[in-house]
Length: 323
Image 1 (cartoon, helix red, strand yellow):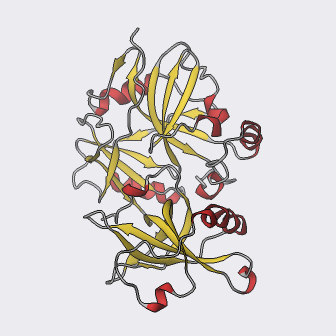
Image 2 (cartoon, one colour):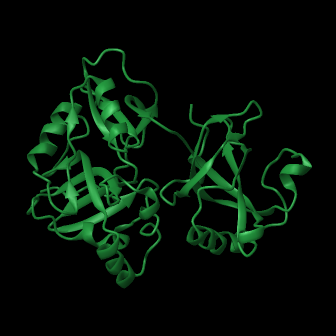
Image 3 (cartoon, helix red, strand yellow):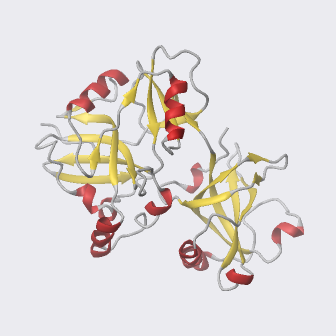
């Protein structure tokens, strides 16, 4: 049997609205986690992040042999997710798992903050690529694998109506839905309008470019992060700052990450107003995070942003303003 490919980059969805006509579309829930492509061969599992990092060590419960697959060799696409006591995805809890490289620590966390790999596509199966098959055929192959264990599951897909699926996602505390064109092939590494992500809350990936010291209860840690996003020409532009949404552990962890990156000057080419540079500790733009927010202001700043967490699975150069 031919070997599995070394790397198949995940296909990306385009932000948008629900299709006007449900015909020709399937709907899946959008899971609030970390994207991962799994390579399964001979009982061995390798997990690769969206930015081509091997993250297998961080998720030992997912890297265990998958009983349902047996000797099947496959490349699968899905999302690593943690759940809260109500059964809803909890991205904040997942933060505890995302940076762990120590094997013993990862095993301990697997017991207290377990992760489930929710599989939604199959890219290679039993010696042949499946990316050129239409979505419906790939989905049938995936359902036939019978992934329904503790750490590996296949969430359902729905025929619609899309509005009903979106409403159900909100009722269940989910992020939104992804509409997938039934006839579409899988396009590795490409962002395609054949997949449309429709969210309840606006979210934006951001580059952390600095921090301001905290005051009062936060006097010994940071008070706010200074943020940037890339414009269409690839230039890093200011996007405002975020000072809410942090736990104390997040604040301390962020300082540990950012202090070694401190530099003397702003990474922005443009000159900023004094109010935006006062007391800022600038850092090399190497850290990606995510915020929830209400809207963009006329001068390109995020309005009412709230910090959600670091995104080590995302590359700095890919952080652009989402439409």
